Amino acid sequence: MDTCEHCSELRELWHNERTGLAVCEACDIELNRPALFEVVAETTVTVEAPREDVQLLDRVCAGLSVSLTWRPAQDDCLLTLGLGGASACVSVAHEAALDAFEHPVLYLDPAVVSELGVR
Ligand SMILES: [Zn+2]
Image 1 (cartoon, helix red, strand yellow):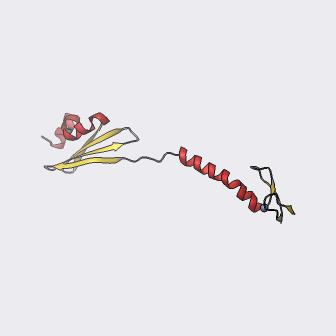
Image 2 (cartoon, rainbow, N blue to C red):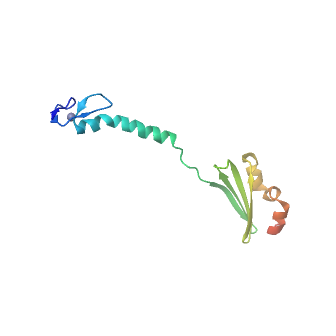
Image 3 (cartoon, protein in one colour):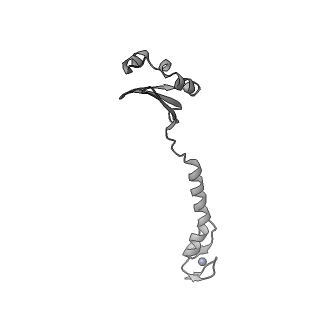
C-alpha cells in the first residue's frame, strides 16, 4: 500500500505506462483511457465499410424487364434483361451503363438475346 501519485489515496499501486506515475488501479484505467480512444478512432478510420451492390434503375416493358445494378466491388454495372422466367446479364462500364439500360439488346450477346425470345 502506498499513496497514489494521481488521486493521493492510499492504495495498492500500479505503474502507469503512459504517464510513468505510480497510481492506483482506478487512476491507471483513467490515465489509459485517452490511449484507448485513440486506438478506437484509428481503427474506425482505417476500416472501410463493405459496399454492397446497388440497384440503380429498373423498368418493365411488354413483359421484358431491364435492370441496372452498380457493383462497387467489381467497379462496373450489371445489366440484367429478363423475359418470362429467363434472364441474362452482362457487365458494362460506367460510361455505357445508361445507354445499355436504354438499349439492352445491343449490349447482350445476340445468341443470348434470341434464346430469351426477345425480338
Ligand atoms: Zn489513484
